[in-house]
Image 1 (cartoon, helix red, strand yellow):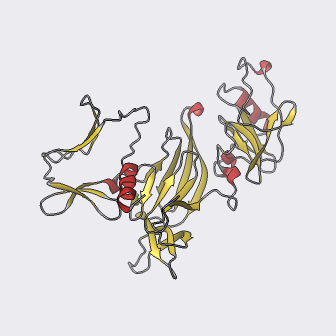
Image 2 (cartoon, rainbow, N blue to C red):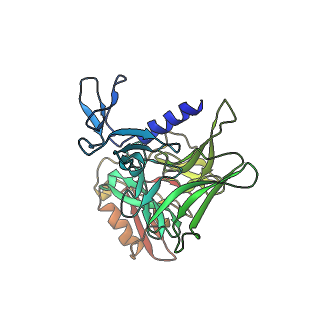
Image 3 (cartoon, rainbow, N blue to C red):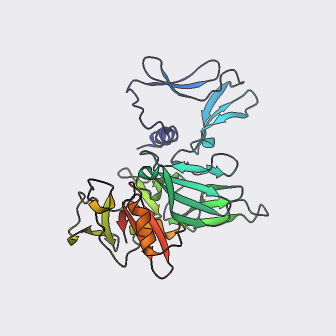
Length: 331
């Protein structure tokens, strides 16, 4: 991939918008009209997406060296720019802001979200079975007022430091959240919330011609337990040491495979199903989400009385209860 191709990749990436059921025709067109509007349309003329900048003084468009597509007026000022609309990705120099676009949403069906809050970055998971309830599965603490920006700065030798930077109380002292150190020029990097809920930095290395894209940062890896990822083991599974090791069942722990699923019940009437116990495990829903202060029998009753509930977690030491509409993996 040459330099031009890499920029084309960035452009394609920044134009992924979350119309998940949309099927773009292979002959769809992206056109810039004389009235200053940039339009993505199907071959039949149906508009899929547009910048809505018609008759707003736009005289041209350009893509700068960091991958920001800008529609500008006769004074050179931006009227619209792609960096204001992050999707699942931040490019170097692109920001999340508290008073604007403050989140990244995963590309699959939007089931994972990274949201900027004043004092933390929050990773949350959308559980459709739970009436689109969101639960937290990871938090990055820090100061993120009023924005945070992906940065890549030259380090010692040929190395590059990658992370998130937030304006400080004084301009010369910004707050930096260090994420990774690449051993080569990593100025062309992107931070992406992937479809599996993991947060990764991908970096393009110009010095190689094969497999030039490299993962230079991964939030959930062998150092930061992958078992906290909601879908590490698919729909259901016991996870240990970053591996899916067993499929819980009424007969005990069986060998895990991708076919491991929660057994469906024929009825929601409590007398038609039973629970089986799995002790000494952790689950993403219990880590950052406040449980209910009730006894275990009450906790069990809350799940039994809710047809959408698949199971419950109970911490006997704290008398805390969590009912769960999605099980995923246990650590």
